Amino acid sequence: MPASRPLRADAQRNREALLSAARQAFLAGDTDAHVKDIARSAGVAIGTLYRHFETREALIEEVYRTEVDVLCAAPGELLDQHPPEEALRRFLLLLVDHAAVGKGMSSVLEAIMATDSPVFDDARTRMADALSLLLHAGSAAGTVRDDVTGPTLLRALGGICGMRATEGWLAEARQITALLFDGLRHGAPQAA
Image (cartoon, rainbow, N blue to C red; front, side, top):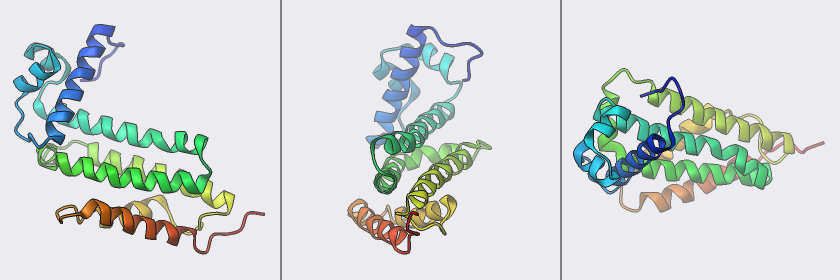
């Protein structure tokens, strides 16, 4: 639930504990985790959970949104630490890992897919924008081709990660992502 003013320190700790407990439960495969169990695991009362999240679906949505926030903050950090080409490679692998998190949460995410929540459209837009930033940086450095857009690359990764139901999919997805990355470097314009 958005607050009109910043949360007190104790309220912020409780919110973070709730999000962490919910994330752990969902990733562990406890797709039916009851809000009472999540509150207990976070060390707070059920009323505290409901002060922060009006419904279980609101909690699930916020867990997913937080995952996307962390993911989409990565490109700037990666560009600060690595050349553009390496930053792009690392972010592509982070996106594959994000799909693994999504696999663990897929059942609970279905609860918000049926709502009018913009969380998935927003996530796709933000991920595509992050890829566009990295592609532009790589193109400007002359290490990545300049004819691929962030949305197109995100669709390609969606195809790679769409095979999540198969055994050993994560290792295979990382290998295919490496091939995709090699293709992004092939035909790169040379920096002047």
